Length: 518
Image 1 (cartoon, helix red, strand yellow):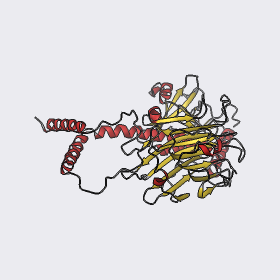
Image 2: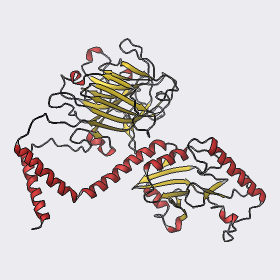
Image 3: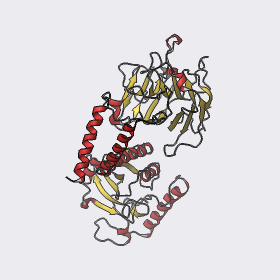
């Protein structure tokens, strides 16, 4: 018998002993949470792991789009949805979390989420905001729409819940029990809608967290069980890491706040009242500090069993770790990449990989129209007859941050002599950028006399002069008016194609229309 057979037999025996000695846990179909009760919001886990809750029945909101975006409150631009404006949209982890340690104290935790508030009204005419909440309520309380943000009911006699919430409030309520500082502020609420001081007033339109500028906001929140410190960080950019300095610091003992309650839930809630706004959640992660056993020496058999188990599992993992890591890394990178690119590409269309593969006939050699050091460009024809140029990045050059940066820059370029980006695709570890198709091809066949081209023509001095002035106008725009764009980026006078034929950075001109008016 080989060492491998002995190892497998021993591992199987150890597994049977462990199963026999371990109490059966409650069955769960949720893959979002791990042993420390941390989770990451994933579209595939929505049904099993999270609960979408509303106070209006039936109601379209909250709902999840095909791209995994969660609309918590009604989009005022959605004319087809005419339900009651007074509503609450909340997403919660499906069950109570194990936030307490063996001593009953609330453990340290942190959360990160990205959201957008889209308003269509003047300042203080929208409503009402979004909040992250740790609460004793499994669902939004009745009569908690509008200014109550789904956190507590309107009538004081109905209030029995305890909660800690971080609110991003877009309506100024002047009721004595609330007294909001403005219609754009961020605060920490402790079982009350009157934010604990200090709060952050962002009512100045120039403030980077002004809530009426329709920013996409990234927020981080943490609680330290040792110091009882609650901290909040926020930025209006999804590409920056967590800022160095928090915007809020408040000290509260959450163990004391929740000491009389056995179940604690976490969620993100948004509400609308007489006015509404589109509140969109893009991503959410929640992490609880792992539980540590109290000091003391465990029994000898536990130490021996733990040591043997660790050795055996380590050796066994060698046979599978490469495959598992490869599959998980690819899936995670693709998910994070799509989320990153989607945030900066709202002005252009996202295409499916299957759609572009069909358009290029599986990236046929006969469809290839250019290539370079970084990519290959194919001619693609969509089902509706639209002809596009599809740039396929070479393997190893499709990093998400590079693609996201390129999409962000090119999608906001608008000039008559600059090639416009039509869309993008990031699937199966591949990145593709979709551009307008330049049907007249590259200018080099005109400059260097490609007589085989049926539509080639001689470029006289006047035509060449118009081409040069067109290039100059494009370069002037890129140099002085387009932020973050290098002058070598996409020019066309009347349009350009690459001297590397890859839709890349350095471009050659293509001829204009027959009258050469552009």
